[in-house]
Length: 240
Ligand code: CAA
Image (tube, rainbow, N blue to C red; front, side, top):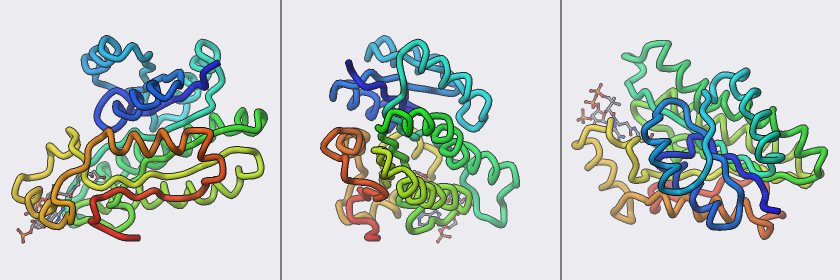
């Protein structure tokens, strides 16, 4: 039987490509989303992948959703924590709300979802957790103290949980994309975008499908000895 893979924020952007990539690799995928019903319905019609609506920043909502998925689809063996938002502003202009929203959605969500699947994975002696971080969590980014802090936190969580889980057959890895062509870039002013692209040696943005291939490898049986890593893919923009 196919392994069940849950992809948070899995109906749009990078998450959508990950959902489709895992489906093509033979996984039984559930894509989660928070608000955009129209995009989610279009996603279902186009891919045939099932969806679950909840807010990853809310532990109780995650708990309910994980229970439903486990009961109706099967035990979650692969978890991809992909859901994320930006609320960019210089620190001297940033509201507390912008800080908290990004920390809760991009970092606490990883705690919520990992906490809710880890006991079952430990009991089954198998699991694959893949956390989507960012080049901006590795190098820091003007206008993103909130996002950079959350994404750096995701890398720390990944390394700690990888050590806790290795003896139980569970791998925990991060993927750190650079600037990828998705709607998330729509809020970046075009002059700033030109400046960013000029600093990418590859001279272009990445594609969601390129990220999805890395995730599919880390989810596969071939990657059983890979844990605690951050797989960077940023067109040469930053070397860790
Ligand atoms: N790289 C280089 N320089 C940047 C920059 C960036 N990413 N962001 C801002 N700057 C520079 C601006 O060019 C500007 O420099 P000059 O004064 O020399 O022109 C200076 O910082 C101040 O910027 P703004 O004039 O735009 O200031 P603002 O207060 O009006 O807006 C901002 C600030 C909201 C941060 C806006 O600049 C912005 O949206 N920047 C983009 C931030 C960014 O890179 N976000 C990443 C989004 S994609 C993502 O997060 C996915 C991922 O994982 C990679």
